[in-house]
Each structure stands twice: as C-alpha cells, then as structure tokens.
Length: 448
Image 1 (cartoon, rainbow, N blue to C red):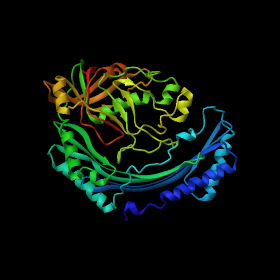
Image 2: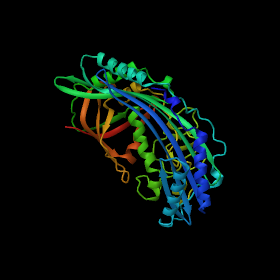
Image 3: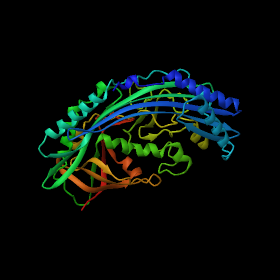
Image 4: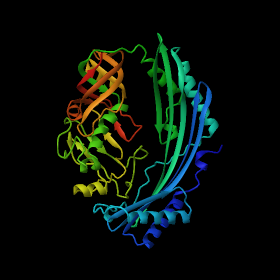
C-alpha cells in the first residue's frame, strides 16, 4: 500500500479554487455575505491484538460547507461531492435555507478589518511515510513489549498506530482566503493485568505532529504495562477530606471546565458557573492561563480562527484574575464585545508551573489522593458542582502507598479553583492545553 503522503488527491490550491467557486456562486445569487470551507482528510490506522492484525483502516474524507447571510438570515449547506455542479447546487440550497430561517441581527461574518492578512507557516505539516505493513509491525512491537514486561499482564485490548493528514481552505466575501495542511500521529497500547482473580486495565499513548517526536513503540507498550500492573491490589478507602493531586492528563481537563464556562455561548445563554466573571479573581495569585496560537508545531496552533480572524497572544487569566472571555464574532456581538479570535476554540493554552515535578508535589501534598483516571461526566456547567469517579493511588508522607479505586472526588469548581495549592512543571504536550500536575489542597473523597 502506498504511503499516506502520496495519497492526497487535492492540494491547498485546488481546495482554495473550490472555495472561490462557492463564493462566486453566492455573490451571483445576491447574498449579503458568505463564507465557505473545504477540506480533505486522509488517514491510516492499524490495530494488533495478541500478535495478530485485528483491524486495518484507511480513511479519505472530503467536503465543502457554505454559509450565506441575507437580510440578517443565515443558511448553510454542505456536500462531499466536490464537482462544480454539486457545489453550485449546495450554494443554492444554502440560499434557500436563508429564506426560511428567523432573522438574527447578530449573524454575519466577523468584521473585515479583523481578517488575517498574512497567515504564517506554523510548521504543522509533517506527513509520515508509513505503509500498512510498517504500521502493523509497530503495533505488534508495542503490544509485545507490554505483554512481555510483566508476568501479571494477562491480556490485551490491542495496540494501535495511526497517522492522519488534513488540508483545509477557508474563504469569505471580505476577500479573505487561507489554507494549510496539518498532520497528527499516535501510538496507543491497552493492557490488562490480573492478580488474585482481580483484573485491572490501563493504557499509554504518545501523539505528535511529527513521527520522529513519538515515543518508541516498545516504550509505549512497557509504559502501558507499568501503569496497568500499578493498579493491581486496588483498595477502597473511607470517606474523608484530603488533598488531591491530578496528573497532567487530567489537570488539563480540570482547567478546561473553566474555559468552557467562559466561552461566549455559555455566557450569552446565561448558563455558566462563571457568569459575568471577567475581572474576578478565580484562582490563587500564582495561576496564569496564557493563549499562544503561534507556537511552531504545537497541537492547537492557528494563524487564524475558523472565521478568518487573525489570532494573537493573550493572557486569559493573569495573577489569578480572569481577563476576558473566549469569543467568536457571533457570541461577541451577543455580549456587546469584540471577538477574541476563538471561533472554533482556543489555541494552545499554557498553564505555567511553579518549578516542581510530580514527586516534589507528592511530598508537598504529604497525605492524599493521586488521581490517575476520572470516570463519568459529573460536572454541572451551570452551578459548578463537580463529582467524578476516580482511580489512583493513596499517598502518605509524600510517598505512594497503594492503589485506590471505587472513590468519588467532589466539590464546587469555584471553590476548588481557589484551593489550587501548586501547579507542576511536568506539562503534558499532547493536547491544546499544556498543563502540569495540579494539587488541590482539599476535596471531599467519598469511599466506603
């Protein structure tokens, strides 16, 4: 099978031409404004289980979406058929839909003067020349390393190697046109271990834009094995109040609840536990949340948002104080504010640490719960009430004592954010929120 890099059938220029075709058709139909986005994605994924190939999947998706605005009404339509006739028909459908929707004075493109005029190259495109045989071999290698690393590893849910390349083009009737390609690659291994008739499951993964920045396949398997074996002998604990330390993979989600609450949609719908909180001190003085959209090669870098607005560096939280919201042009208009170039989400949030690694944070915690997995979706975005099932390790005198399961950690996020005692330097670089371990000085831990 050929490499992924050779399979892409539409390049950026071709996608831009399709976008321009859609916009020209919209103009000819007399709309006030229009925008269009075309995309092509190609991917390869191989999964091996117990030394054999379990699945091999190749994906190739393409499509174009068109949104038109006419007399304060909005219509949109999309198609996976990229022929000129199909695109013109899709534009016609969008225009028809715009005659049927309700008027909305806040609808429309972002202001023309905010468009990105010189999109920079952010080093996001690094295709992996990986064929099916090589992907299968890596998956088998990863799983085998995990299975062989400890006699208590009794089974596997498999190892998966994936690679994806996507190309996007976006344009609007302000004259903006932009396009870029980006890649993402990953290796994941999921293992099961058994002791005294009780089984435990855990996993490890690595992901990056560049294949040469991935962890070695065998190391992924061994890390999955270590984490799985570390769960054996898990105990229940009595209900108590104690410090909780989130590992980085979970700490980013803990911060993510605040970002969701300050999103424009939650604010204008009046459905947020951080309603009208701009200017409030939500965190301790040492907590900062920075948005840095232009980091080369980072997982959430973008020169412009999904409306073509130029992105820029800003501090969302500085010295614990919320500086502003996360807004698209629509939500900004609803709130009487200006877009923050966040249509489509935030770009590279960074939560700086305080100079400590996880071991130092365990010593600082003394006695408490190190949380390694969260279960369930018990977060009320309106009230901030927080209740999640948790799996992890009990810590005493700054050292891990034994694994813990079947507990629930709970509190209210407004209070919990104020109770953050420290943030580690062990940042997880695999997502759009770069955050280290977070120590909360006290939470309710419900157990037996």
